[in-house]
Length: 59
Image (cartoon, rainbow, N blue to C red):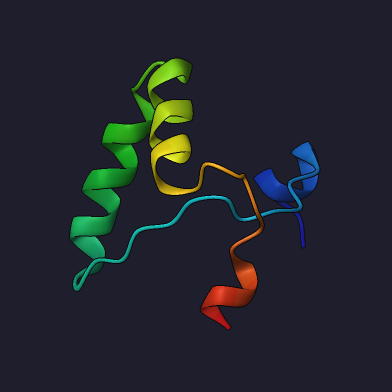
């Protein structure tokens, strides 16, 4: 399927967050997109220090 993940070869899920309403998730997504890369990396490191693929945890 075309999109960001295909264009950039994304193959792992290393961070996720759940929200009860889609609008809350969108607000958080837009906020994180404005963050500096270092802040995003710190977010991942705090949640998943080993950078393991979390996809199987969700299925």
